[in-house]
Length: 90
Image (cartoon, rainbow, N blue to C red; front, side):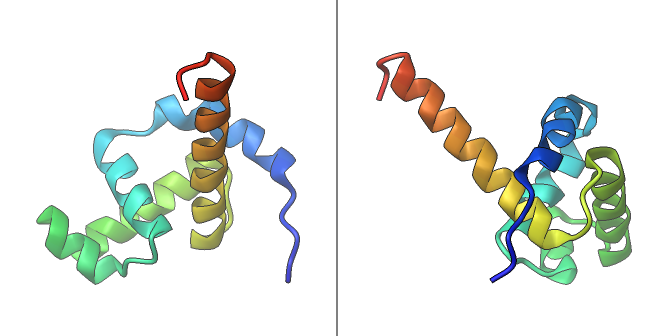
């Protein structure tokens, strides 16, 4: 199993606010393993538009591929849950 350097996600976390709504929607679906074609059908856009959004997400967040998108989202969710637990909400 390949170990992922989580420190690279610091920039990605800071850059999240630079993503548009469609870029976020595409990113979330890519993290689940959805194909560009299926994402396009779901969002009502072409697969090539999905590819453009994917490329922009990777560039803005300085990630290399869909696997890093998935790991990044997983880590963001873990961090959010930990924050809620520290606040006594969970």
